[in-house]
Length: 348
Image 1 (cartoon, one colour):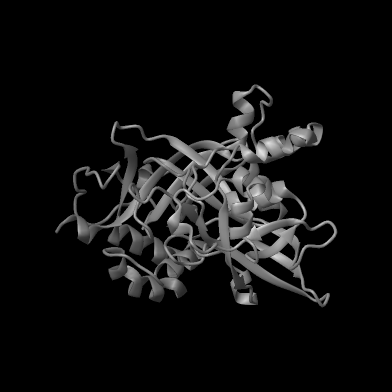
Image 2 (cartoon, helix red, strand yellow):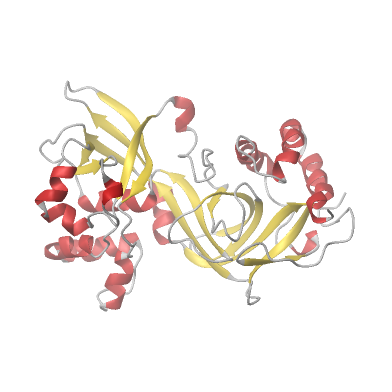
């Protein structure tokens, strides 16, 4: 069957799930449809099937069987069982914004040590008694906040800006030097926040006319020239993220952290979305062209984030390592998305 041939019943009319509008379209209208490596995408789909939501759960048995199918069999099955819908805002806007995130990898020490003095905390006790909890500046300056965090540091890293980046990304990989000198690799996974508002330090710099490049490389370049303003920049974002420690076995290291859907993220195949626009676990055809990368591929809505708000809005999980950091630090480009939704659920 040609890649652009749609099969099955006539498409349903447009409908609005939550804060987005889904407009049914023909398969051939998806840019690059038929040119993706579905084998890579299928691994992420099987991950979604670990915690599926209806009506996607009904497809999981067939998804698992087709993991050993040919690309043509997978393509034909999708076209028979799914209906593509262009995602739009409720006002009809079909173009939005794609950014990217990654999992930082940092050297760390279990205890404070020369060159490692920036703590990464687990959730403190008694947070429910104070909402929002202490801000970043208050944590650094108030004895009451410091007393609440005493004994709660999971590890210490060298650079407070790297700690901020790790908190913004939501998780990270650490190679920790233990008190006996041995080293272990762990993952710090998201555990919660102080419930203060998130403020972009890049936006803070832009609003003051201090930089024109608000990417992380641009921010770090400004800090290298203005080290005396580092604390001011850090305090511009009052939100602090707390972590929980997880082992990083070889199998776990092949995937990213668990996203909001509760399944491990797959580099290049997982996106964070606004769940009021796109349900967790949904397969999505993503098209984006910009200075950092050209993307026409199938991804899965498996995560969310405080800055990921709106119908046509996604954060692309780049993975880990220097290349992922470079992509995530600079990506900000136009986006179009199509949700691939079970046909049977549209006819009930």
